[in-house]
Image 1 (cartoon, rainbow, N blue to C red):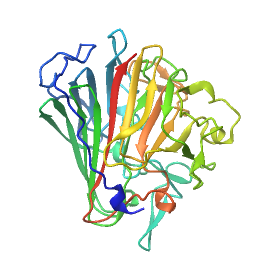
Image 2 (tube, rainbow, N blue to C red):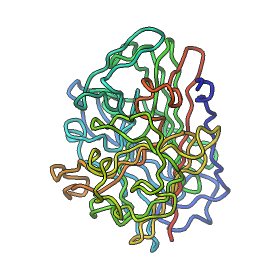
Image 3 (cartoon, helix red, strand yellow):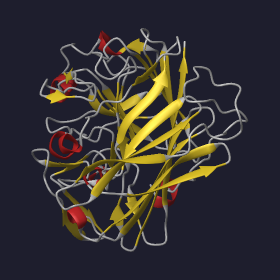
Image 4 (spheres, rainbow, N blue to C red):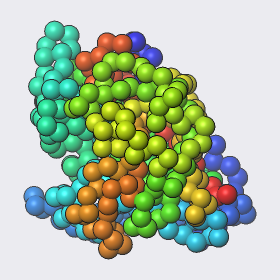
Length: 387
């Protein structure tokens, strides 16, 4: 598939005419201005002396806290059916843990989200070797991916929308990837409380790019326990089975008759303990779904995640063709989170919009190649409601 198919227009979500104040449970009745001007506070200092800040953005009943280190979503706050607010994203309360221990909590992932087999790919006759940081694979950009570096952060307010623009240039050869890659990522909150992520990148040398976000969600609230009673509807008839290294085999398998069928709303824990070789490989769910919609020019429906206990609902629309659903299988009770609770297996899940894992080595998958003169653009939109 040509790169031009991948170059999609980042859509601006409809902002609406009303914005609510941060503490309001409903999303009607307010001024046409955002309820909060982005602000920052000191969060910590890296070993090289770089100061890290936590930025706060709020609008339409949704509140984000973002670190200038790794573009990390530190907190994501929404209201439940009774208007009670909670942080629904896992994380740490200090910078040191993010640096030393984080399993990609909230991270901005690049240059390549997900796994590349053998940490190796060939492009235009040249083979590139990447760091192996997940046994025999390169995962989420290597040993020092985009989630482990400082970003330049600038706040903005435009009409009824507010947010942050994160930028950095990944130099030629960083983590083995070719080309000087200029990256811009926008975290926006609309007057309706929608959280939109716009990704953009250009390069001066042919390279591969697959950017995503790695927020761990628990709609009952961070530190409250398992997500196995959440429900999920996922608009995908096929997924990409993996081998023991969690690398896709190349098959686009039908989900029908498997634990991976979420075409109709299903409790996440319903099939997760079944004797299935794919579940054994992932120690649960850690797989990519090929969304039925494919690559689109504007964000289209991908999924609905719901928590019956709190009533919180999150829907995701995206321009991307794939989505990695990871059920928190490697949370092992050794990490203490933001609220002081220990995280255990299944205490959160990730829903990473993306191109497919190992695409640089799989010619039948949508291409992740970006060339000079082209612009990588993708958009993912999260909407929040209650029932």
